[in-house]
Image (cartoon, rainbow, N blue to C red; front, top):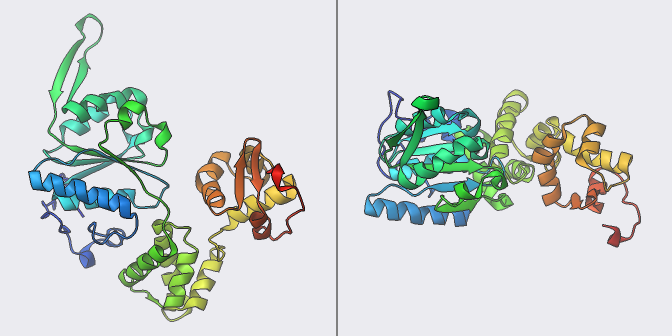
Length: 348
């Protein structure tokens, strides 16, 4: 993986090659695929990036700005690291909440090298007054900053090296239109299919030195909610469980026991998901009901429910959104362990 330039061990990796071989990388980094060829899933996004990288390398120019958006855990950070490797350039990593003032952004931009990638995670959380400085930085590679105050105030123009901004966000709607329009490519990452997750499970189980058979791999993929990050978390716990309880071997039964200890059922629903569904069924007769009422019933923040739990429940058909509030589907009633009531489907 490419290193920030202030790392004393930083090197310029050859285009398309990993800077450090996988066995020698820290485990978290080793689990990340090192190149676009190794990246599983997101075929359209990967193909778009291949086109951009190939054209930039062919012309010897800086890669255009890229915005990656979609639910958490699907590979936005990994793709940013891969882009640095494919371009043979260093990468600087930061996040939106860290860039609080214009001076923070100015210091970051002026310290970049020619052709370096700047990755800003959760870019939608950059304050709007700071975000405006990105407009000229992305378009003209310059920023204008004010020196002093009052009668002595003056504007100073700073020229910037040509760089690539790679932004990542889980909430594209919170980005302003002027900022979004300055990204040459805006591409969304979607949840992974079961087959894609199985490929990731097989690869990462080997990297974790986990003796996992096909049945165990299918158990992990089934419960991972279409998300590679969850795959890695489940594999880590399964490895620990297998070492402690099953002499290091994880077949379907051992893997299922490990994941049931985490209170994750065969559909990927965890304890909070079940509490969410049961609260809707038992306390609100299946809805319609607002998230604030559900959160009060189960002792969880409504924002957490909206960001973490509800998207999966809606995507999988356990809950539907209506103008009046959330409504439990028949599938949701069954997942809560209850019989769906007889009702007119037009009420939904």
